[in-house]
Image (cartoon, rainbow, N blue to C red):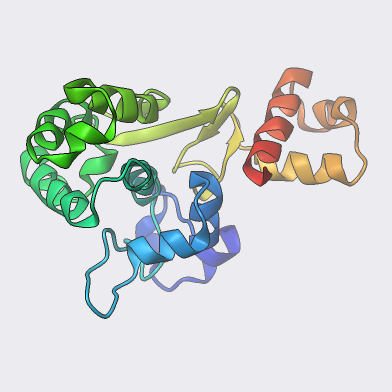
Length: 216
């Protein structure tokens, strides 16, 4: 992804915001590429649920928004209601990426409970929203503006848009998990990687486990 970022003519304006292509969004959200493209590309008869902030590429907020969209789709919320909800929440929360805002947990709950089918989707009445959305928000650290700042998708791993263009790294470091996993797969032991990168054994193991879970 760093090569993609460096080669993009507008990349300078997006430094510190994370940068992902469709393939990486699909990998990190555990959705198929076809589904992500279906949500983010204009079709013959419908508008996208979300358009990438950087000419077909996606920001950190886009990535987390698509996690929420994917969960709503999986729960059976109609596409039109997701779009309506996004527009409503954008106004209420004052951001163009409401699904990456901390306020989604409160403002969104009332809205999705009111629009009809959402209540039935979670099989728990009005408690459905907490059951579905709060686990998605729990591993996220929000900034003072209420917007997502850091995502920890796995114990010992962080996705920080200000570090390595938002690539998953060992928590608190700039070491990409993919680098460690690739080196381990090529034959280097966890002990060797710990020494080479000045990491604890558990940190390297967490990185390898995370990458394995993404490939599963």
